[in-house]
Length: 97
Image (cartoon, rainbow, N blue to C red; front, side, top):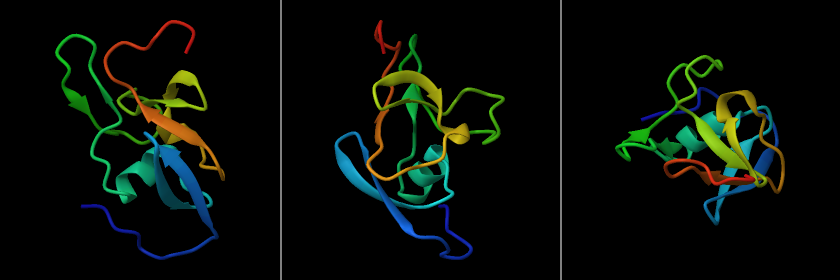
């Protein structure tokens, strides 16, 4: 669904839900997930409905993920870095994360 206009910048490898994902330096976590074909970042706490990045500018909170053990981070605002560990959030985040 999403395609890069140009391959620029060095490759960066991060882990998403235990799987290696390749991104480009300068990508945000949310854009790296979309480019890798990952169709949602989180599920809602009440119904479990999947939510995907929507605004990609930090307004809507649909791209919440856990980054390096810290939960409820807006993936659209966080640049990727080598070795980063990202987890999609299922329902309500756990206390302390």
